[in-house]
Amino acid sequence: MPRSVARLVAVAFSLMVAACASLPPPPSGATAAPIGRELSGRLSVHYHDLSTDHEETTFANFDWTERGENVQLSLFDPLGQTVARIESNPSNSVLMLRDGRRFVGETPEALTREALGWTLPVRGLIAWLGGRSARDGSLVVSSGPDHSRRLSEDGWTILYPDAADPPDAPRRIDLSFPGPPVAIDLRIVIDRRSGS
Image (cartoon, rainbow, N blue to C red):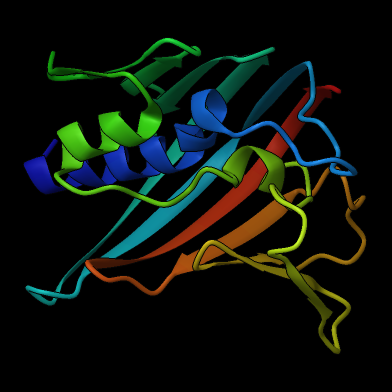
């Protein structure tokens, strides 16, 4: 796998996991994260480095297992081979790439800094996968003419395009971050969901 693609996979990995170990306790009135959840699906990441104007897109399948504050996430290439695996718990996070490289950080944010050289502000993703805000008071919700739902939080725009999806179990989520230093468009399609 080319180094740039491996970095994109690491971006996708970090994006999906950064919320898990470091999500702050929900404020009063906010819905708590699920105790246990398993998700499988597909994702695509479009990455645009604004300083170099380099752009790239990558695709992967994923399995996500969440038990309390412990999360395990595996990414697979189209042939089903493991590309990367991350394990995160309250004390540390470990990212292992197919080429044998291993990154360790106290938090997913620290892991992102080490693996990518910059931090992604994505602590809310675990809540966004469940169709909700990570924090009260910092959320803008709007419904488009197609009845999609949209959140704006921490600089990210999170779009739930299918109005037929249950609000707490969306099947498709489109996320975008305008940068700097990089602009990211992430599309997540959840094919299987179990647990609460």
